[in-house]
Length: 300
Image 1: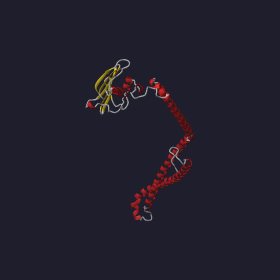
Image 2 (image 1 turned 30 degrees about the vertical axis):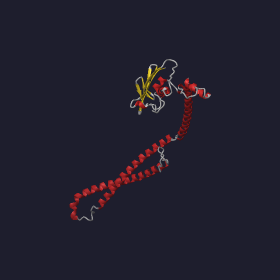
Image 3 (image 1 turned 120 degrees about the vertical axis):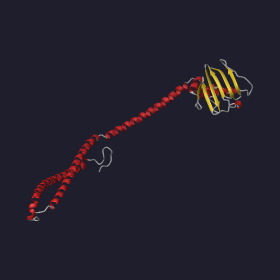
Image 4 (image 1 turned 60 degrees about the horizontal axis):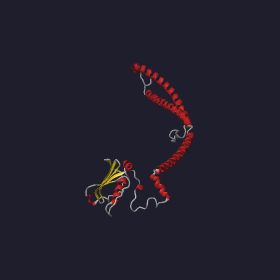
């Protein structure tokens, strides 16, 4: 219940306070004496309407416009000074509320639009349609909360149904895609075989490189042997001088024979390695798919 209203610098009221009594209160006075301004001030305090500042008195100067209303044991003050405005509930300040009323203050005021009747409004509910009357009664008795809850519940049910259908479609698509991937295990096994053969091929290539190095060494030795002097080019006068080098030549010949045998063996191994490489490449071409089973890129 409203017990008092104070208006400061609001229209024609410089600083007036009205103490109200329980029950019906009647405010009387001459025209343009500020009766309607009291209702406007009360509406501004309770509903934050109007949103402009035309009601600030011309004589206010730099002083603020204030409307203070006592609701039983709570004091609600609406304050405005041009660009600065605020609500106060029992001394606690509220700002940045826009066109709305702070929730804490709305709970104290507990008024709706139906609680207000201006002097030019038609008789309450008598001029409205049956639908408008029902809507107003619902708001007064808070039945609109049930209507909003039912509408929200219906909307959530529709959304949940759509989400469920979308999820079921997604599950069906994933199950279909999983059937297309049944051969992944076989591809993994085949990939392991290919990797093992690649390792074997690398080993064969290394053996071939070693054989090539031995062949080059053998060719170098043959070139060196061709530069050695023959018996026909040695005179008897030089025989004694070359006796000591003969042993070295013999040792070199024995070493050369060993190298020739090694080269023959290496040549045989090279031939076998080349054959193994050819067989591995053929098997690799037969077993390797056209596309990579992991990334899908073209392999050949």
